[in-house]
Length: 598
Image (cartoon, rainbow, N blue to C red):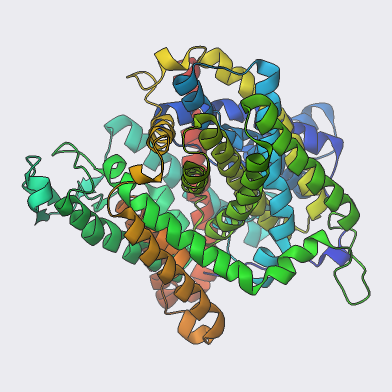
């Protein structure tokens, strides 16, 4: 991947570059509006979208028109960075529980939060992720230099639409060409109802599956297919070869070898013969995959814990001074304590969770947010559900029969992971553009507030009766189904874990620890050729066709750098950013159409 030049050092930046009332208000308003899309999509298909690029383009167009019509001051690139930071946070509020654990809790207990209580709960969950991201910024972005592809694509998009000169024009044209490709890809999928195409092979089924009437596993069953989406290929162009190949190798092993073995043993259940067995397979593969990610990430954290925890101490240099662009240490310590107390109090008051369990759950959520930050930095995918399952598993041991503690403590984990990953992507964009982290942290917080207020209202209006409305043809709500099923399993205790998963988790955790240690102690030349344990673990929880698309994108970039290195350096990331922007905007448009007119 081409190393994108970082904007001038924080010291050289203007003290308030891009930070203004209108940038924060614009972002909060857009975040509140775009939260409707993600809530709708989450309850329909169990998936949300990162709205950073969408919000940046909308704000650019709006303020450009306002500047011409009313002669207001142009909306600068720094302001747009603050805007998209707040907007993406508001849009991501769906993952703070509104499309998974909250409706699952209502369906299982028959209880429902009032609107004010729901707003407070969702806000407290989101803020946990924000404070973790602030502490992780320096380590993950400046020391480890993780790519954060989504943030890089957003930054590149902003740089191109604000650039001037002949060279800039050609890059904007390439950005536009990529956007056209992205829109065309999405429209083709929508019009032709394109689906993943399985590769032409099948594996014979063993005794466990044969007992259930299954004679073979097709490649499509095992998610080994080609996905007709340009967006995933474009993401692979940005992520880089190591992470993409790691995900492909991990996916082929998990879905092509480990899952068939689990099916043969009767540990996992097959689906319909002509279908993709992702929902069935991930119920088993999720556990070793999460174990590997958690073990690898926490081992990496152990090597750099002093640097990360320095965020909680005053002073960062030899003289104890701190640059004014960072969140002041004293302010951060108070902020950290308030957020921690609020998250604990909400669990105790709203869900009658024991105080010591609530405290333990929040600290566990901090650890899982650290894991999520590293995973999203490498792969562009934030494992929200996977991190929540760790807490569900833990509380299945500590408080086995309590469905509320199982779901809502895990709600904190998943929501914190989402907001942590979102802010780190935005901080990557800010690093490229020279924005100050403390301004982005404030705008993210305002976005979380706006999203909590509007998103909670939208959820209650759309789904006044979760038990009757969800898990139906109109509202499939697959994420709700998963969280509900796991909570029901752990209501019976740890013994209800799927057969074979405990042994698989132990092996996967050992592999994760060894891989992370080798990454730290071996020379970089050797590490470059090693599979990334975090990426391999993530592949257990994703379809293989996602890893194939990523690997194809990485291969395209490698070929471009070989045959046309100058062109690749100049246009490669720009083209990929355009494709991501185009397909993302088209997807948002489709979501709005289905919500209000389709």
